[in-house]
Length: 153
Image 1 (cartoon, one colour):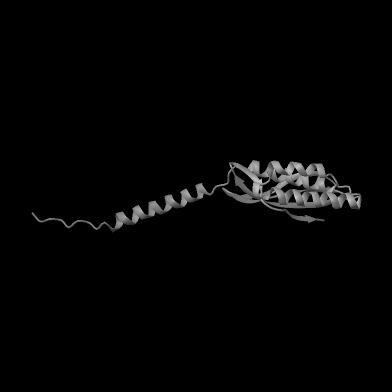
Image 2: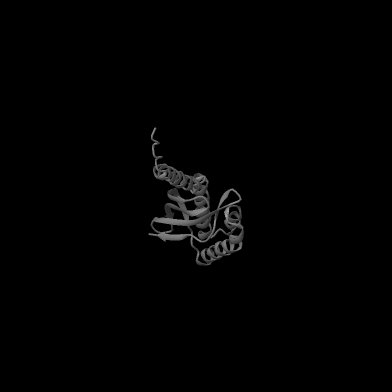
């Protein structure tokens, strides 16, 4: 009886490698998937509201920044907020906001940005505004990690 030559292991190795690559790719994307995008949106909306109230001359609103700002950014956030409130009081500016809505949530597993838009109520005509907040995820919660990119008008 003649012996039959064994088939090469190359096709098996190719298929196994392909399965491993696809599984790794899907696992990486699952690991990088956004975490709790609603909390990120809520933090950005609260930060926008506090900032506008401070911009309307209410320095008391600034203390709320502590509850949703990254620990290493709290002092800087409070200083920025109090500066805005002091300038508003000195200039007699009265601001308010309405219709805040989150228009873009671009967060991953540990960081990203959230954009909040609304109407800024001024002594003159109302203006459209957009705040884009940098966020980080620390200790299982989203936190503001710096000043917002603000566009008014």
